[in-house]
Length: 252
Ligand code: ADP
Image 1 (spheres, rainbow, N blue to C red):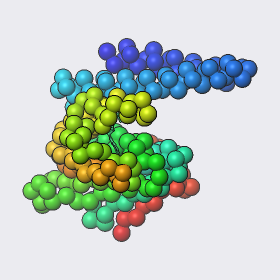
Image 2: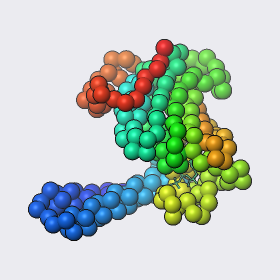
Image 3: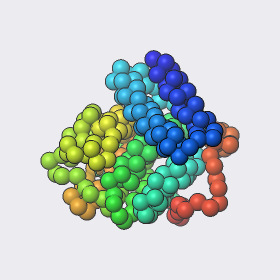
Image 4: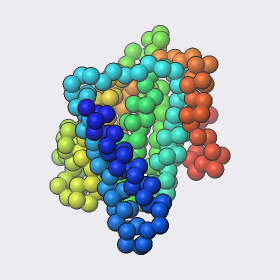
């Protein structure tokens, strides 16, 4: 099903991109840019709905591969920095020095959670900064052999979430207030997907927020120690390590 929906959508987007490279007058260019933007938004909504249905149907199986946490976080933040800079927001990240960087787990799904949380932080923060932090978690059975439990924080200085809405935002299709979709777009599925993915990773997601001051979303997730050689091989060519990055790696 996912293939049947995504393939024509990607064809529409691809052909729009190609047409944009041809000789067009200003009006045509403008119309096509709108088609492209609407297509990209629709694809994001389709992806959310497909993911959500897959999780609901208990058909989403996590991968179990070796990866380097620093590379994953670095490439994810780098991608998100573009959106943050457009709004004049500072996006910082740090991995505490006691966190093992080579892990075994599902890096693509971890990335998806971080993109959702940081994407929301950017969307709902008019000024200030967003910080992503990773620590070792001692919340579940510290020191259990063969398990690395991590704690991720995504903090912003944004609009915050009213106290009475803080519980419902993790439910599917829910947004903090009815004007949110009008002002910021979105489906209200992002956090429901994050919650389900975090739970599949053996963790919990929580948040604290003060209206007008900002929010912090934090989650735990379990991994296993990874094989450095396999992680290096898995990462080869997949992550862009351009030196002009505007993000900071602060690990001790
Ligand atoms: P979407 O962003 O697509 O609406 P989400 O499930 O990701 O859906 O978020 C649900 C709602 O939670 C948002 O519509 C918004 O009202 C609120 N929200 C999420 N993250 C933040 C944040 N960092 N700051 C303020 N509100 C947030």
